[in-house]
Image 1 (cartoon, helix red, strand yellow):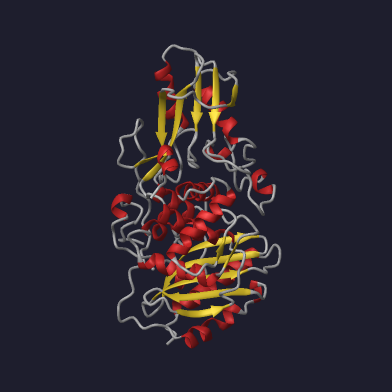
Image 2 (tube, one colour):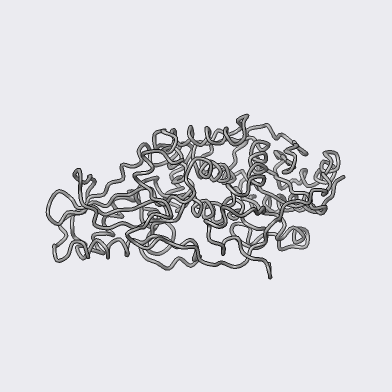
Length: 458
């Protein structure tokens, strides 16, 4: 909104210390990451300004609390909207008190779709150093002219600079190759080995369909990928083996496109020829939520697994993320099979997610990147093209939330201020939407959120 300072225009190391609200890496991780304040071999990315976003400030201490009966009366008609498929789970929690004000099937485990990314984001900020950055390296191989490309899970590593979104600046293969070429000198490249052993296990998640990869929704999960395995033009299909593809791209940039590329590791004590550092964990959280980036979600979940001593697999990530969430909001309610929300086997209780959001809003120092990353209704991210009709326009700039969409599932979870100035956390999930009717369900959820934001409900 005009005249409002953007949360994202503020450097994240200041943002993490700011008190704003929204309308311990493990040994293995330390090998793969460096802190933002460590001197990198290649200039570390810095935040770029983006258009202003509307902050939601803390509710006034005397802002009246909506009554459960008042809320129920106001949303009853919206909850009954046929576009929601007749099966809606809804939970609303008062941020200041933690009181559950609305509970409609709130304890029922539902398929969350991408609202699960909120849980992944919170777990990442709880378990990881927010200033740590993934490091992609080129090491000298055992044979003359051989190099080893070592990945550490940077899901934002790009071929070249020029992301139209502008924030955060990404590490690039171009920069990595230039530094490696300078280190090699006149020696010709003979072979590229790729090392993606930082992560293990299946490359696709439980409950995923083959169409997710071929359709460009997500890449096979790997510790090494460039442009998340996307083709030079378009978003699909993703590369079947992102690590080997990254090695081929590096060989091209080192002037030897015909050089053989294979999996392998560097010998002990191998010299480091070049490195680039990706965005901080805090910045990755913002990207995860604003752009609903599935690849970043899977990367952050793996990073949590490594930090918590779990295997860097889907199963290890599920255990580690669940453990971290239980430390933030005791009582459970989360059974997430992946970090992105693509899995149809994932379940969460809407009341648990609403409580998690209330906890986030109550601790804006640690969880500021979650608050900054949640899209603002009618302004940016996955909510940019919504809240633009007369029935929902009053909530534009007031609701800040994460969307979730799978066939048969439409969800919206986030934070909003009521007409009386009370800050509420909410999760609204319709998990029986008729096939092909997600767009209509989204409109119904937006009207439901608008009803919550527009009422005093005392």
